[in-house]
Amino acid sequence: MSTTLYDLDRVAFGSLLDSEPRYRLDQLWDGLYAQLADPADITNLPKSLRGRLAAELPTALTKVTESVSDKGDTIKFLWELDGGSRVETVLMLYPDRATVCVSSQAGCAMACGFCATGQAGFTRHLTVGEIVEQVVRAAQRARDTGRRVSNIVFMGMGEPMANLDRVWAATERIHGDIGLSARHITISTVGLVPGIRALRDLPLPVNLAVSLHAANDTLRNELVPINKRYPIDDLLDACADYLDVKNRRVSFEWAMIDGVNDRRSDADELAELCRKLRPSAHVNLIPLNPTPGYPTRGTPLKRVYEFRDRLEELGANATVRQNRGTDIDAACGQLAAGQPVTLSPKER
Ligand code: SAH
Image 1 (spheres, rainbow, N blue to C red):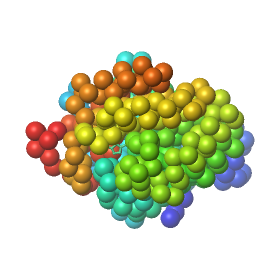
Image 2 (cartoon, rainbow, N blue to C red):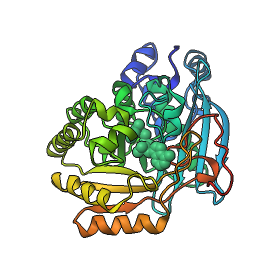
Image 3 (cartoon, rainbow, N blue to C red):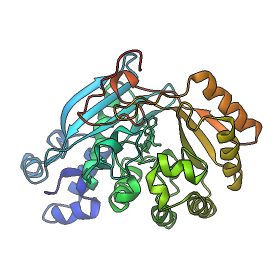
């Protein structure tokens, strides 16, 4: 794969520009990351240098479509990559923040049956440039509507911990160069224990989210097959360890599936797991979103709130996550990059 514009960190750009005066690197860096400009538009750089950059370092993402939700607050980008694979990025505008949901792989090998990306299988890891560029392009889009991206979640397509080296290099760029606080960056994992341990040893205190979905191994083996390799006890140990070292709260994602993991006994088991962590884990409840390969419904909202109330009664913190972008298939678990989710209005 050829090197693309956002693959290079500042040091690498420094060597590329070593025949130029030193301040050129500052101008370029300010243009790329503070102004979020395309190299062609960084007009304090000489035209010849701009031409050279465009020729040697193309961008990585070709926009195929941009879908905007009914209310206009969720924007989904579908990109084509070198080699033809496609990935999606979602920009969510809230009154108090703007969040970019980033993909780390084309497809995913984790095979969670309820997730559209999992249903599609794995194609390849994304490069650093492809990950960073998703953030830059979404941030440019946000800026055009007068907004600034404040939060990044690695909750798009793919398993970030399976591509941790590149995800980490991208995180450092998002933090150090785009300028987001580590506390506003969240890496979500299906529960790859070695990845969680590796993340613990990396410097920035980013948030860790774990896609738990079940609080006992029998059910979790079914919903999240990688649980057979990293069962709940081991996963919890790794989370406790992350908490100890980073002093950051760990959150558990829980897609509520009608009649599967939304019973009172599930809430009771989950609350017990949460309490094993100090401070207690925070639970994000998301009613399951429909995907073509998994005909089960999401839990109706009334019961989602009852489940939350039961967790809180037992001392676990829980939030019901607003469902964003279901009308453009941009909600959690629906990112399929070009495989249209065709459901009747009733099923939605
Ligand atoms: N692979 C990582 C990153 C994906 S994040 C991980 O598993 O954490 C996407 C989140 O949406 C995960 O918590 C995932 O389990 C959840 N999800 C997947 N399919 C879903 C669906 N159909 N409805 C609701 N949430 C879903």
